[in-house]
Length: 114
Image 1 (cartoon, one colour):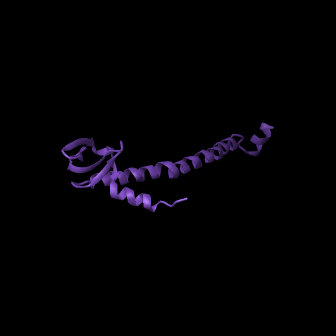
Image 2 (spheres, rainbow, N blue to C red):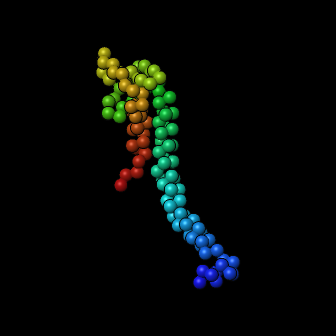
Image 3 (cartoon, helix red, strand yellow):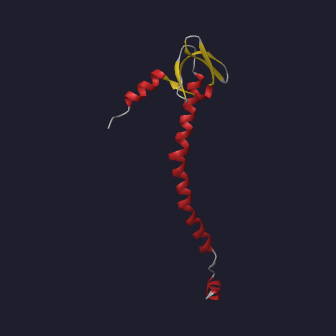
């Protein structure tokens, strides 16, 4: 049978190469879906958080990832000094500030109930 295919000029291995490419299509499709569902939204969220951290200024009321509420009294390159009570100042990593209190309350009000 192989001799007949060779005599006609058909390449018996060409079908195997095309089959390999076709079998890769579902894998590539899964990667594309994975990118748009998981990776891209996470990158957008990270960029939004960086912009928030860059916009921190003295007087902002914020909450940290650990749940500590405070008012910003100083901002450095990688740290933030918060006043959490009268005469109580705490230094936090800037990256651990999760959001402004007013903006977080507005986001909670905007969520649909149900």
